[in-house]
Length: 304
Image 1 (cartoon, rainbow, N blue to C red):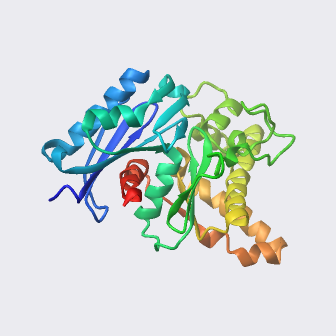
Image 2 (tube, one colour; image 1 turned 30 degrees about the horizontal axis):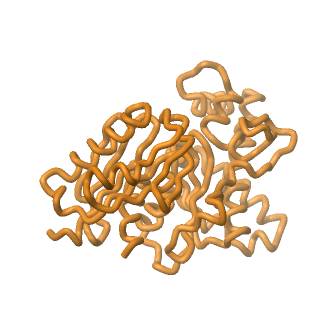
């Protein structure tokens, strides 16, 4: 293989760092997962270790490195700020890694990286547009329009977790009531179902199945919130596909059956909503896919 054929993608999460080695066709050749350190120095050390280990003897043949990371990311400079879960206030991650490895390093917000990975993983046509809906600890979307990442004027494109859907709903950390994130994310469910159980989302769903009135209300808001997120992405940018990933996506039919029921109810009431074929536009990403790391690897290809 030549230096023109290999790229590395790294997904730095709050507890784990995942890396992939891909060839020119985007085929994943190697994968690796290691713990993420806390604080700027340890985050850099985790990234360096992940890249070095996943590339192995082919490190000298790497054309580019891409990194997906939580927080506010200046994709032009690789500056990361306010990555609270990582203990990072301000980190010149792109420049630091580029100096270490002696090659271009692109840094992107983790949800945007995952959107790009989902676009390629699901084999979308080059001119297609997708909204990647991340249902994890938080709720946010990444947009790939006609094959290119869309960040918006100030990088806030896809931050639909702050869209209000229930003015009488629970209070979110951003000070608003009934935002999508508080009703349809892992952290939002955990705050509503604060019983101390290890997996509050599963515990809440089990209680709802058993007929618990409070759990039934939380579950209703959850499936309606996910359905609303799908509708927002279609109505605002008319994406070809809404691809759902993140920890809650692993619930599969236990989540999506209710989401589809909500969409079907809307379609029965509105010929216009029915014409949008919302249900047919939704798909789940495979739960074990390294989607953000894969998208990070594709960041290098954006430079040609």
